Length: 325
Image (spheres, rainbow, N blue to C red):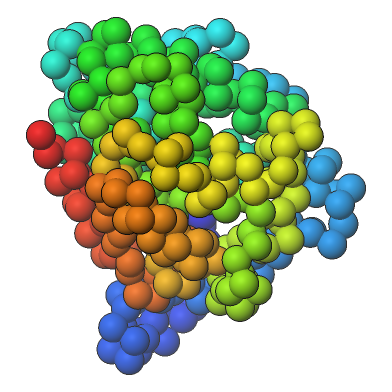
């Protein structure tokens, strides 16, 4: 992604500067979106070829490597919860330290990117929080049923160590959807809820059946509707419908949402998830759940993760949220 930003930036910088004034969008953000469209980033998954799609994501289970070279000077350690690898850093050994549990995006079929680690590191360095970064198992080898058990176990251990009210759950895209799955798992296990959840472009409807989805598929420069549906099928448990609330929290009932913590979502208007996220927050309002929806005009999917002025502003908002009592 870094290569994309700088390669395209060199070629169309003047046009990007023009975009800043015409569209009230930073040049870097404008370049990022236009660059994605120019190189066909959205078409990197050959969604018309199901066999290719499955082969692309049927990766053998393996351990991720902590990007120590990227996060220089960071003291980190590896933990294991069952067979799930977890990275912990910025840890000071105090029970009262806040904890940011980050569930990365990637359609439930792709590993975390360096941008995920960089953003999380900015947040925990600014807030003094401990970072917990699970590298949960990916579809199709693993699914929501196998990984939710591991995540609930991890959460239980963190509650015992720090207390629930010191924990912030955070995730982007599929990771945001997984945060909502984890909240359901926490409730089912009878555990105390975390302080809050912060979601970046969360995937709240695995069925992708919103009537406006086809239109927003034409607006979205990153992720294709057809590819999302195939990824959702990889992640669903055997026999599970894609509109099951466990993977599509937009369908949670008032009773199922009862007791959930405050939920804040960030979303851009240039992404396919926008209508579902908008309606998801309407559901939260109807259920009486404290929530906030931050909508960024002309921003793309998971815009807070990218090194743009708008992304940096969103990260600062996240830092403020984490610091709140």
